[in-house]
Image 1 (cartoon, rainbow, N blue to C red):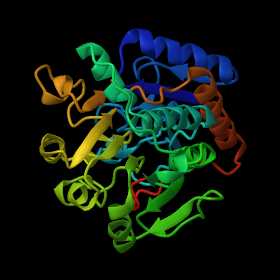
Image 2: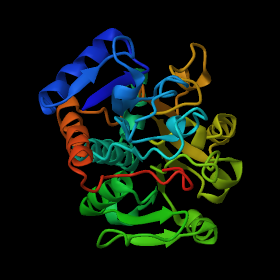
Image 3: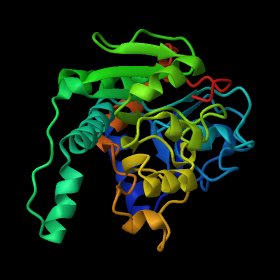
Length: 313
């Protein structure tokens, strides 16, 4: 089977993916561009946020396999061939890495480690009050694979954990309270110490982390955004941080990436930021997962992790 590999990356990253994918599926031919191969020969595409139009004019395309967990940019490409199934990357290794980052962020907020880091810079020796984990309520937004894994890891650490999704779906992990619907979210916010966002980006969740949400939280609550920059109203967060309504924010994703020089997040004392690195894709595991879906396609077996475009993920 002829497979097209295309994405928004430099040659080094592309070549690393190509090597991992070729090792994982030696029975297929991987093309790094459309040059040298007839359009009608391409049966599948493996993509990483490809530029709009990259998949046009492929009449025999039967699968678009994303290497990323988020598919909002991909679904925003109006030139995608109609009716071609899209599969997103669901990788247990990435889920585990995201849960580790969520746990680090919550622990750091809980135990005041970000404040201790500032005290070190200021030469201040001062103990901070220490609460027990079961005295903190952590709300995880999102009950997909990453949200479920993070909620379970936080619960295992001893936190009181709730997990919210916009509509009905699977049950939450054992010991985690499941919430759904806007009224349930608004009702829970006044009792939340730390909010962790792991929602998919859809029209309904875009801008969800806004002024009204921050105002509904207890004064001094923590925000952890590990999902998409478009979930967050950055100006509203800065105002809430400056007023003390939000005590600290851990941010991995931003409206513009890389984060522009001079943005207030860089130097804000109540912001800890990561360069979209909370859960980096592991080439070895992701290549094996993509290869398994391509093998299923070739054999006529059911495909895994198919996107429902109407839902946005």
